[in-house]
Structures are given as C-alpha cells and as structure tokens.
Length: 353
Image (tube, rainbow, N blue to C red; front, side, top):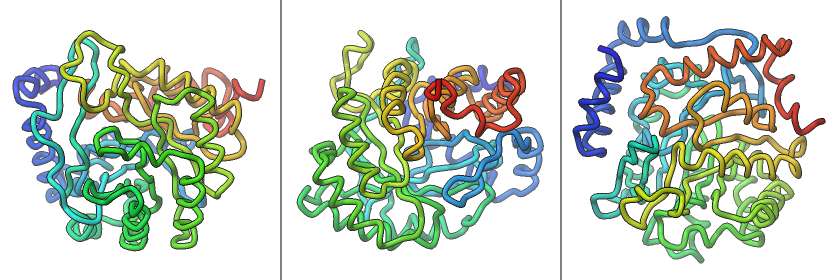
C-alpha cells in the first residue's frame, strides 16, 4: 500500500492515536528480523559520499530523526532500518510523567506542519534505559534527548540533567540537552548565558560522550548567537538549530495558542537562523539543522550553510517512511553534480565564500 493511501487512513485518526498505531507497527517490526532485512535492503544507504566522522563517531549518512517521535526508545532498530543515520530517543526525564492535558497534538495539514503541546510525556529514565539497552549499540548513532521534569523547579533543574547524563552514559552515543521546548513551563528561561555556562561546566566532566545544546527558533539572531557562543565557549560539542516555534503568527490555521510548531511553517525561520549562527560559529563547533526539511534540496542548502547533520520529524509524518532514503538519494545526486567526493567538502561552502 502506498503511503499516500495509508496517510489518508491515519489522518482520519486523532494524531496521538495515529502515532500510537505507527509505534505498534514499528515495535512489531523490531521483533521480526525478516521485516527489518527486507526494509533495510530497500531503505538503507551505504554510499561513501555521505559518510563522515564527528566527535570520533561514524555517521553512515547525515539524516537523523529528531527527538519526540520515539520518546521511550522502543523502536530504535526498526527506525534504523528506515535509513536514519542517527536517532534521538526522548525527551526523557528522571521521573515518568504523563505530559500535558489532551488534546495536545494537532495537524496543520494545509501547511504540512504539526502543533505539539505534549509536555515531555515519557515512561521515565528507568524504563527508557531498559528499553534502549535492548538495542544499543546499533549501526545508527543513538542520541539521548534529556529534559527536566515539570515538577522540578528551575533552580534545581541542573540536578535532573546530571542524573540523566549519568544514567544514560552507557546506552547512547551522544546527548542532546533540551532547554528549548515550549511545553514545559519556564523551561526556556534556562536559555541564558550564565546558566548555560554553569550547565556545561557541570555536565561535561560526567561523560566523554558529546553533549549538544538544542535552541529555540524564536530568539533574535543576536540572542541566539550569544547563547550559542556561551555554550561553545564552555565546551558544548555542538548546537542543534532548532526546536519548535511558538510564533503563532506563522499561520491562520493555528488551533490554539499553545505548544510548538514544526514542519514547513518554520522552514524559512530555521534556515535563516542557521545562516546567522553559522556566520559566527562555523568552524568553531558542529552545527545540526532541524526545522521544516522535507527534501534533498532543502537539506543540501542547510549543509552548504554549515550543517554537518540534518534532523527531520514532521516530514516523516507527512512524507512517510521513505523520507530518509529519499533525502539521502537526492543528496548523493546533488553532491556528485557539484563535483564533491564526500559530504564534508560541501559543509559550509557558502559560509567560506
């Protein structure tokens, strides 16, 4: 069955119910190696032109799945078979939490976007660690997206992140610290230079794994550069640009003024923020671009403006399970057309001019 047909069925369901159904399918695939083998043969890319080593970690391709899809780390092997070079699980918190009240997930179909007010719903670090331990390590790079519990006050938030780094150090390849979700009250207040300094001073000695900061797209360029610079100067290993947006002026189709927007509505915002930050920090740290990427041309644009890796989420929902393969195949063609023998040669080419 073609995905466009399947999508019509899925889109008749409540978004959370549709997601739960998709996760059941992925978990079924996890337990059936023959399915993974068939899918892998059709979806995985093994072209040397896409391979790179970052932080001493080998990435088979630059396309990753952002945090929020597999919150509890239950479908990592199946997601790997779909061709993702890296996969984030989480956001995971120390204690389990149900998240915000429903409804909290909305499709903005005409805009090919999602409005998400989930609120870090997850099974908690003990359960998630057990889940991830069943899969780790994989050929795909496994990333722990970590966040504080809603009930943890901001002046104690760092304790939550310390606990999580220690807990997941042995079952992930790298960490993403989530201080930029709009769905946990006051969390974004922690995106402040002095706190960022203290944050990385505390966490970096706890692990040899890379720790990256994911930022909000709703800062001014000057604010974003200041925060990212503070992170890099205090040994953050990279910056993910960016999380979801609370700029509700982006569309008249917004359901309610709550939650964060992802997908095509933030394509321009995400691309331009990457460019602004890359002009200041390219060559000083590793940049990852996320937000409104659903084709190879857009991914290539982000790469040329300094992104070493690309993350997708909403396009996985709207374009279907072939999205990582399709973008990777398109990137191979674009790289070869421009005379590059490896993706590393194209990264930041527009910034270097």
